[in-house]
Length: 460
Ligand code: F0G
Image (cartoon, rainbow, N blue to C red; front, side, top):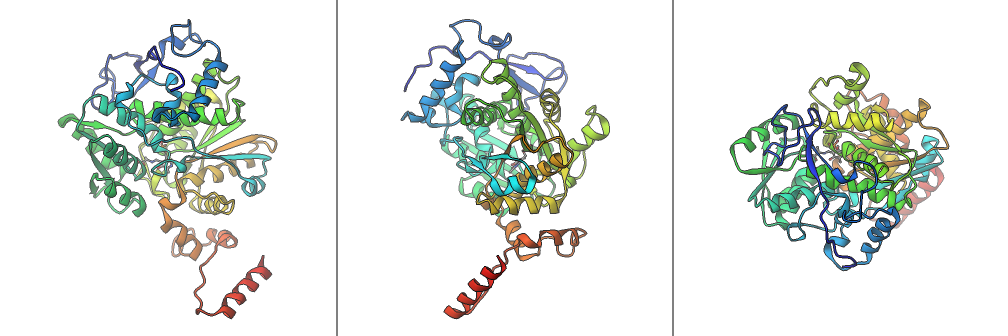
């Protein structure tokens, strides 16, 4: 190890609504006074930079920055993790409880074709699908699963649209804990289901949707000693903050103008926003990027909350979208997300299924690829650009949340032209034809292959 952490980061839990500060959280991670969500805050940071040298964070931001960077060359597991590397910015969990798969450290790619199609000069994508279980969930899961380990739990559990469950199952297995997965029957991709099976989770496919699974899980944790690993667990949010911290490090701590994220249960946007505000307060960055959140039109309760009700309430809905990861009608973290949207001056936008499918193929055509839910970011960026909220000279970063191979079914149907066949979106989908690459079945004959090559060359 390059340095020894002598002091512990001091953190407290606080209710986001009534400000109550419990000494520990109940099993449902809700405030016992008003029932709202809890969050971590760091008393030493309140006045901006840490007060004195007894805190773990250096008074000089550049000292902390070089420590975090140096850890990348360390042989210690925790230093190699893109989450634990930034542990001074997280609540304290003892190293012996840490469960890590060396998550984080995800690449930041430039997206030249997508930039051209949107009409912006600087477009990058941070690919959180390049995590160990191929989604952004790993950054929060390493931290929250470690807190379950610290609490001595035998069982951990989550309701999921597939990625949380895959991630939880992996981290539980690594930490010698049992995991219980509740997923909506028939509404998650095979790739994600297969992950939780292989990692050894007790996997229950419930005949309901994601929101129904959450309801059952909330009841279950009241009756059984299982540790809840959904993003209402504030440790998840803390771990997921590191995506934004690492992004700033990759940009030499020069913030972009815009960061764009997909919105489902709204834990991720809350986490990224929390990190941006904390980094600003600690003078690690000098200004805030605008954080914008994009939803699918068929699963847009947050969009409607902001646009129709001024963010004063949320109306739960029955969600429906081909982006099964964000098929969520009653997002738990909407108040946290609203707060960071307003604090950073971001926008909320919705996109159609066809807009999302086109954006996904464009991200693929840049040689990057992602799962459908991640592609709402590019589709939403086009709309924000169209409205003038994003300018052509602006520097934009998309957060891609899941890997292309999470949902190959969607991709194959898109390229075969079957994705929208027989649906009300069929005519709108004609606009996607130029991006479709149907596989060609040929005889095992050289001439036939050369014919296909020549035809493709003429068409390109
Ligand atoms: N993108 C992907 C690939 C997701 O899996 C999710 C959420 C989101 C975006 C939205 O993030 O919920 O923090 O706003 N998936 C959850 C799950 C709900 O169970 O895997 P969010």
